[in-house]
Length: 416
Image (cartoon, rainbow, N blue to C red; front, side, top):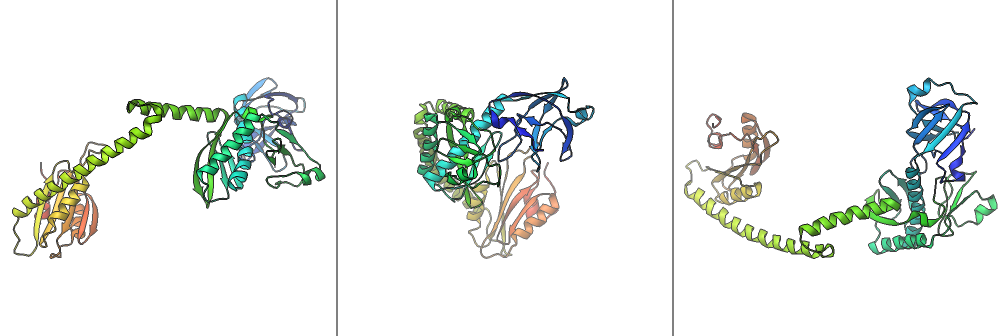
């Protein structure tokens, strides 16, 4: 027989006493089955209660609660300990759920009903599914995008209903009563349909635990949206989760304001000023880098007159240049048609303290030198990684590589 759900009678009940228990199994895990229970089994997007059962005086932690296809609720406990028990119809059982977890789940679930209704009314976004996680609650709605203004109206509508502190009623309507109800969604079962009526604000079939008045929800905040399978996933917090979220964000904002030596509400202006200053500095740096590239390339080309072979190999090894500088320098040197530029610099130290040699190779328009082929051979010879096209290649070689020796075709000895 299905387990009697005491949490339907009183969602605030956290303890209960029953007589009779038996050992069973749920998906190969040991479980305790009772005739009735206050423990909510995971279903409908809501997580299960946790807590403890005392069986003939022996305590057992309940880590999960599930319900099978026959409506039997399984309290998952330590399998080895349960196997030693001798349970019967006379076993005395005391149960206790975690009160804070239950209250949190009640608030999040009630908030989900209200927000689903508000999203439908204010944003024409019908709820397709919802998930009430341990840390994050989400609602997936059948609309690809929702403007911020509509999300704000939906959030405001929910919080107005919370402040009104209206009754949340759970009941089992007759067939005729059910037909007359303005349900937000159709029931998933044909019989034993339980309805949650938030005083006309939202009327929906549901078997979960809920608050008994909207004021118990406290607060609801939409904290994010994202695209999901052609729909929109709305993330929200309610009750203490919403308060904790606001406090953590306020702390982060206050810390940032302190670093910027401004008020919390002035952080936006302070960041905008920093961005403008950074852009000006980057523009100045770009101009200086351009001058440096022109100077270095002129020096390198002056030191390397055109080779009789038609291909002039120019090696420039720098210290602490980034990859962007190497690319710019190689491109400028290779602007002379006969040149193949080999530009290198030691990169940032790795986990073991080693510093790879970053290398960029680029050829001029009049040479047929294969940059990608050369880099592949070099990486195989001395150990490294990288490659590219015939006209340009880049990658990393060991720090102690003698690039000049490698470039000019002699044996690939290493320096030091």
